[in-house]
Image 1 (cartoon, chains in turn red, brown):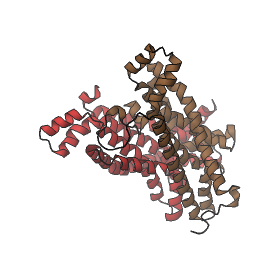
Image 2: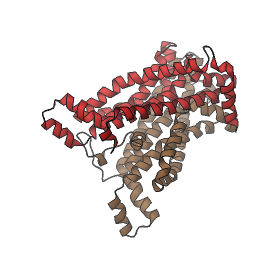
Image 3: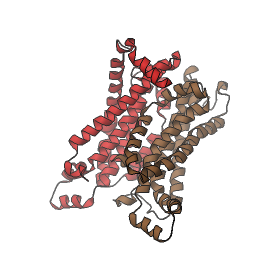
Image 4: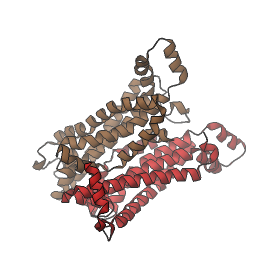
Length: 221
Length: 234
């Protein structure tokens, strides 16, 4: 297998394990970009999704924002902002955040809205405050779906954060872009497999988060 | 902005030529992905144990950055449109399989029993009962696949001007003309929105029985599924 040979050669070359262009450093940078973009997107998408889902209003606005954000090409945004503003973290963060918002926003909205109405009515009848209905009844029930939206956003960001290298930042994309220009397929394939591994790790993290955070009563269903 | 539609001659194409090329490079893979996803999804519905491993494998495919796939494919397919379209078809497949499986599984048992009682064979039941009922879920998947595909074609610019409208991005940098980048992003976004609207229209035409108009708590079954990938792995 051609590709497997590349992978083997990439990972067994000790030069790839040290210094500023070493795998640990590039992984760290990649994870930093991912967490930052995901955090910003969640800071926007989660509250808006929870609120619109709870009130049941603004569904069309949520769908519109999601469609508009999906329509914007990540790579195009990156180059556009890099050309206009110059090289830095901003041209990387904007496309990544725009990419991550639709899955988080839409899934959160849909998750809260599709919670079984009878426990919500019961909570309201018991005199619970609207905010405690949202955080103590709706959110725990909706949590698996909310987490799956975050997970989907995280995987897309992990994969797309490679474009950071195009505007001369770091991250695993460095291997892919450098490999492209150096005609060094070993680097490209090595970088791609690192991203795939990172995506699997992301899946595992969210699986663990689901085990820890989701109430057993909700999980059983 | 001066020269907004002034396409550099190295692209060897007009503005509308680029749009046509972009649409072809984006939509053909989705079509191929859909045609491949239908049998795969049917297998996953028939053999339940097949679904989790298929989901796992496709998630890994989905995570591999498109640029890396382009670069590796150059060895086999050269610097051509095909190199751009192969990974896009795979991404579409990944998005569509869970959407279709979800949609087909959401068909109620009674409906299937009724169609069997009416004398429908398995093929006719699939084509005339299961697929139409799964249309909203499939179209939701198609919407995600189409907008992702239209956005990703631009990355093809990195492997030697194979990115249609994305090539304008490379030229914007090469010639220091930011208006070309604005043009590329806006045109791509407008294309994506138009295709999305078209798909919504198709869905409404194909599902005349669905309730129309948003707002309020609708029952779960009638709810649109905007993120088919999540709903499936719940």
